[in-house]
Amino acid sequence: MLVFSQKSKLTTYLTFQTSEHMTIGFVPTMGALHSGHMSLIKNALKNNTITVVSIFVNPTQFNNSDDLKKYPRTLEKDIEKIKKISDKVIVFAPSVEDIYDKSVKSVSFDFDGIENQMEGKHRPGHFDGVGTIVKKLFEIVKPNNAYFGEKDFQQLQIINKMVAKENLKVNIIGCKILRESNGLAMSSRNERLSKETREKAAMI
Image (cartoon, rainbow, N blue to C red; front, side, top):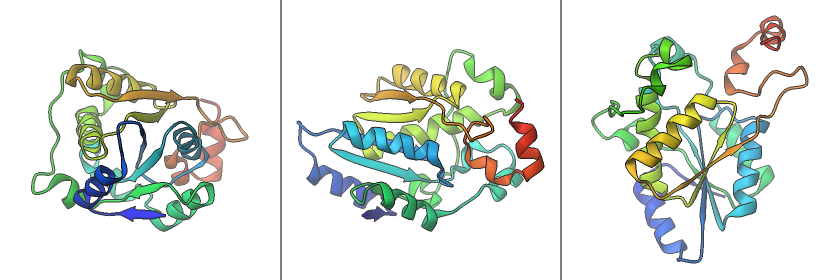
């Protein structure tokens, strides 16, 4: 398994490995991988020549610094989980400095107002951060197909809108929700729940 921490080395590698008849499948994640992520990776492996998985906790989509600080980071475990599926997956785990250079800030996007609804209503600037990092990652990886879970419904609509407005040449593929045995949608943030709150969350 290849693990890259620098975008320049990843792009150089992919440039020499791909041809016009090959496709790159891309699964962007923030790590703390679970079975939902694994299903995205399996879809990418099944339908593409090369599969790239990014693991990067993006600071610009957090409007709460404490939330960013507490977000689970389990890179070594994540790599081991991916390796059990396939050692042919390419992992991209960059630093904040490598991704953002000297300017760690979001680009402002026009999402036609959908960024101000639902979750976005309570997290100002969140979807600008999402759009910023996804666009940066697309420019680095240059995927043909990118895979996202339908659990993050609003995020999926935001990404589709950005791809259309920015005229990006990538197919966005939404994949079905995977749930825990109690019905709770699988999420990296579930790791921060106690046993009691995990059961209560299943009622939602």
